Length: 271
Image (cartoon, rainbow, N blue to C red; front, top):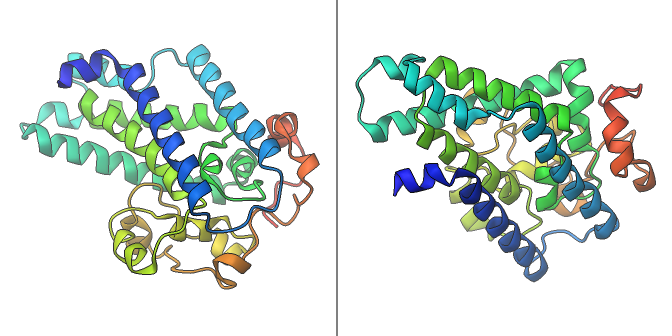
């Protein structure tokens, strides 16, 4: 089973990606959390267009990605986990946890370092919040993120299975926690103890800086709680909060071509 998953890594990842995409799209139609304020057609064209471009850029510039590096490191004994004897399940858990923590740190870094913020603000210019926001990233940010993951894989030496599981979970939770979906309060209260929920992550997309600089986690909510960046609810409530960035309020100015050149334009401050 494991060998089959690893041998068909791209097919497995694409299958999970489209399955989660369809589930979230249907869920948002059946039980939306907030009314959308801008054109879904325009937003989806931009957000899904970025996914297509990101995929091409990754394949072109990094034909060997985190998964391939994991095999390479394993075969050559690179990384800490390749020099200790642990049960397979524990190696997988450690690999996923460390990769998730690094993504949390990376996310915070992209907020607080101006040069990286120029790239990451593409993600935050979305004036609405739905599952496609979770895949709205500039190609250069995607390249940098993959480079960081590859460096972690070389240093830590997680198994290829741990890497592919992390990548699948990261894609799934990114679409889930950006979902414009309604969750009962009682369920959200329990669920957010184990995974970042839409109610938790939506706060991070607030126009207010004190909310904007909180809830950096993508998969696991524990890093925010441990490191003091957790914020339970938005000040104005989920229906009343404003999504996006104060200096980008015109939908016609943040179309796909604009998003691609946005990092190279002035006004890189947050608000």
